[in-house]
Image 1 (cartoon, helix red, strand yellow):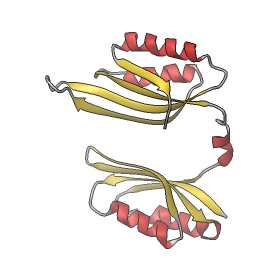
Image 2 (tube, one colour; image 1 turned 45 degrees about the vertical axis):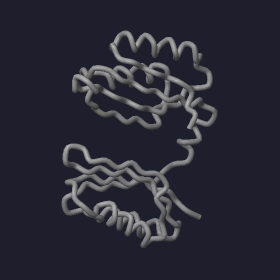
Image 3 (tube, helix red, strand yellow; image 1 turned 30 degrees about the horizontal axis):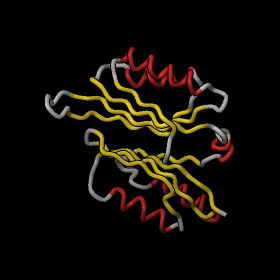
Length: 177
């Protein structure tokens, strides 16, 4: 039997962080199941879910908290299957947003989603340069889970209203993988 553990690592970027963390995972018979890693403003951030053999779990959990502990923040949390079971039957949607950057875009989109009890599964945002002008363009890509009892037309209408209000382009479509 295996247990899943989510690990976050945050600290100054340098070569070798991923190698050091994954080496300890392998040393305990573990496997990286899902990961997100990024360098943001000189800080490296890693978010990974690993599966560990049950008999290695406690030892690995203690070891993981000590990995890179000198100048890095490392946290661990065991996953709970009953939480992910809560969203069985919900409809996955992909939301893409692009437009001139201004304060509050992420907040207003998140506020709209929470009002409709829509769960955010993943969200990535970035600033890209416009091809001709070089102006900063906000870009967001999110996967969300829509409750099965929510009218999809209502959801689409809300996204269109938000698009006008924020003066950005919003595409919301069923997630196709």
